[in-house]
Length: 450
Image (cartoon, rainbow, N blue to C red; front, side, top):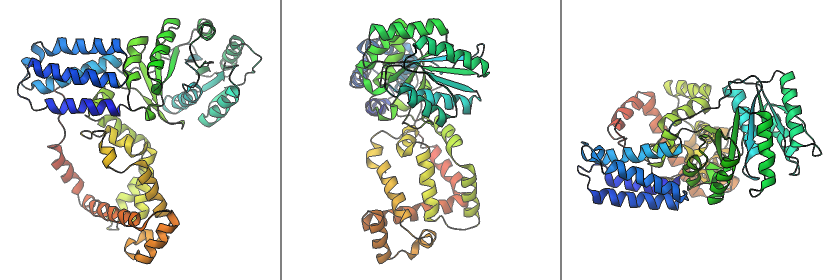
C-alpha cells in the first residue's frame, strides 16, 4: 500500500534532507511534487487542496525558516499533516457497553464486509479475550449467510443462524437476544450491501443502527475502489453515525488515496487495515506509523510488534542454541526462516516497514515468487543434502532443478545466498550482531526532529 505515493514523497524528502537553507522556491517546488503525488494516488481533490494549504501556511512561517535543520523541519510538517489527515491518533474499538456490545458492519457489496467480520471476530477473541457471536442480516446475496457461518467457524466465534425469508430487523433482534442468553461479550452484525449506493440499502442499514444502538458502526471500504470509495464514504457518512472505518484489500493497493481521503470525508477514524483473505490479516491502524512509511522513514515499531507476534520463539531459540554450539546454518534452517518471513506477510510487507528502503527496492530485490521458488528447490533436496549443502554437485543440482521445476542457475543462486547467510549467522553467534547494529546506527536514515 502507498507504494506510488511513497516513491514520489520519498524523492521529495531526499531532495530536502541536508539543506541548510529553505527558500520559498524550495517550498513551492516541494509542494508541487507533493500535490502531484497525492493526486496520482487518487486522493480526493478537496483533501489535497486542504492538505497543501495547511503545509504551506506552516512552511512559510518561522517554523521552518528559524529551524537549524530547515529541510527536516519541512519534512516534519508534511509528516504531521499526513498524520492529521488520517486521524491524528490511533483509536481502538469502544466496547464499554452493557454486554453484548454490538458492532454493525456497513459498506458496499464486494468491499469485504463478511471476511472482515470474521477477521474482527478473531481479533477480539485473541487480542481482547472477548467472546463473540456473529450474524448475517444480508438476505439478498446468495450464500451470504452460509459464507459467514463458515468464516465464523474458522474464527472460533459463535454463529447465530438466519434465513433469507426473514427481515434484517428480525434477524438482528433475534441475534441480540441469543447473544444476551449466551452471555456473549460482543455481537457483530454483518449487513447487506449493493454494488452501488441506493436509498433502499441506506434506509435498511439506518433502521438497523437505530434499533440496535451499536457501540461501533464500522464502514468497510475497498481501498482499491478509488473515487468510487470516496463517493460511498460520503453517502454512508451522511446516513449513519459512523464510529470507524476499516480499509480492506490494502495489500493490493499501490496508491493509498482512499486512506488519505476517507477520514476527511466521513469524519470517522480509520481503525483497521485488512490484508489478504486469511483471518489473521487485520492490522490496527496507526496514522503516525503509516505517515512515516509513506515518507520512506519506515515503521520499526510495527515491525518489532509483528516479529513479537508472528515469529516462532521456540524455533528461534532452537536455531540460536544450534549456532552457539558451532553447528552450521543449513538449508533446512533457511527454509524455516523463509516460512517465518511468509507468516509475517512476505518480504514486501517487511521491506515496507524498513527505514530507508524506497518502494523500488522490491523491484531490485527478492520478491514473493522467488521465496516460493527457493522453498520448492529446498523441498526437492534429500534431508542429507539440506544438512550438508557441500554435497550438492553438478548431477545433484540437475536432479534438484528438475524436481522443483527450476533451472540449475536457480539452484546455484540459492546455494550462493545460503552460503552468504551461513557466514553472517556465524558472525552473529560470536557477538557479531551487536557490532553490526552499532556500525549501522550511524547510518540510519534521519527521521524527523522530535
